[in-house]
Length: 331
Image 1 (cartoon, rainbow, N blue to C red):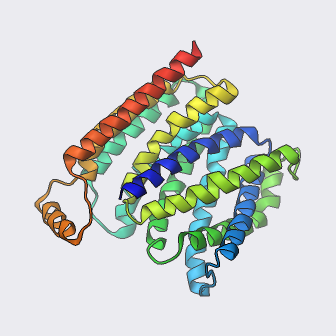
Image 2 (cartoon, one colour; image 1 turned 180 degrees about the vertical axis):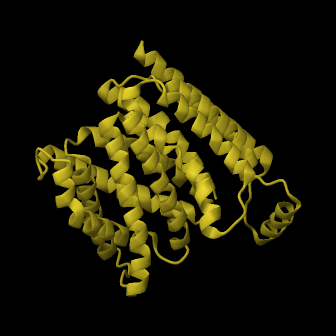
Image 3 (spheres, rainbow, N blue to C red; image 1 turned 120 degrees about the horizontal axis):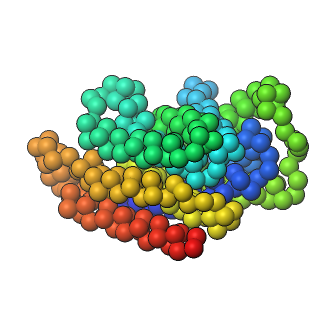
């Protein structure tokens, strides 16, 4: 379990760089996503060959995996469009809504009961986004695109959570990248008519950025992400990704001098998220206590409510330190 949490936070840190590359790469969002998918598919193919991992599966299984690839493609398209029409800070803050959409979509898709604790916790994310939405009317289109992106991101996490139980994570990501490359490639001519690009072929600098983005912020990130989903619930994973804006906004300021005007809203939202998330991760019902005793006998480790509370306080301290560090750098 500890390894899973380490992988989760590694994925969060890597995710913080995706917005930076979205700003560094001068291609429009459609081309950026298509090249990211293509480069990632090639890298994953090489990895599968080098590690001799069997990747030949039935057509039905391929279709099942590739459906999720379309979801991540749509998520990336709207995410980078949000950054292009607003800025990195807005894009990554809106991504935090994935925990809200997960709390809403997962019970509907899996035909489960809604968890009131998750819904209440997710409303704090909505409050944070609403604060930012009214700061500047020029950001509203970017926020709308970011909200749509987070909805697709939540759907991807939910469906991927099912896939990781049956397939190797690298095989999953390989076929998802192929699906996205083919689907977006077929639609790209129409997309470029709607949103023209100055250049279709990336120059040397953009190619280098795309290579780094594909290797570290796609292959490594999403393989780690898929491994984490084997041990940690989808809602908890998406909730932890609410730390991404902390890293992304600090990097946005350091690389591009972007204003920290959304910093306070993020701080308040993360405060509520991480103070109350212990009530989401730890169910105090009798049923959970019985499961706890059974799982403990099997040798599995389930964190206690007290441990979760301490863990979330530590998360909050990290947020506070990074928030005031960014404020100090802005002076």
